[in-house]
Image 1 (cartoon, rainbow, N blue to C red):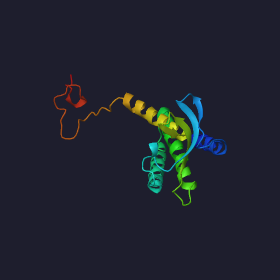
Image 2: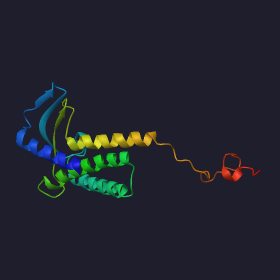
Image 3: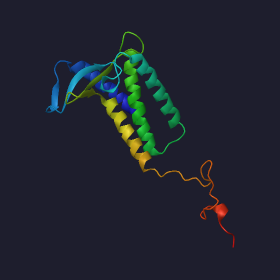
Image 4: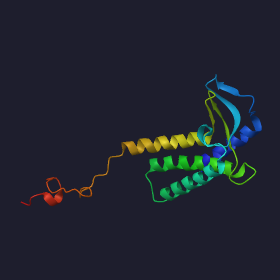
Length: 166
């Protein structure tokens, strides 16, 4: 939950120090700081349907936690941790930063060339997705020794049951 704690602290800092109408450039026009409130998903998709996003985020977080409890390799656990921490922090905003439960806005503050404004949780989610994608892409395909359903390995001499005993 380190990701969620860091994200929530940066959001508190942004609420106290940033203005939605006065961006602060960091790398020229490429990256800057600007307070924004997102009631949708990434790139403000599904804006106005915050409660649906809240339910979906809660299901994703719960599913990832259940998966993580099964015991994962370290690199996969790091990827899942990034996803869970980021999703949980943004979910916390949706649950608590509105008039009604589940209808709040996510606090964003990192402006990417006026294309999108995000936060630390969004970065963690992206990092988690990249870690998992690379890890799964590099993992060898599981090899079955009995063949796939509806097929036979009767002619495969490398299969143990097809080797001649001498």
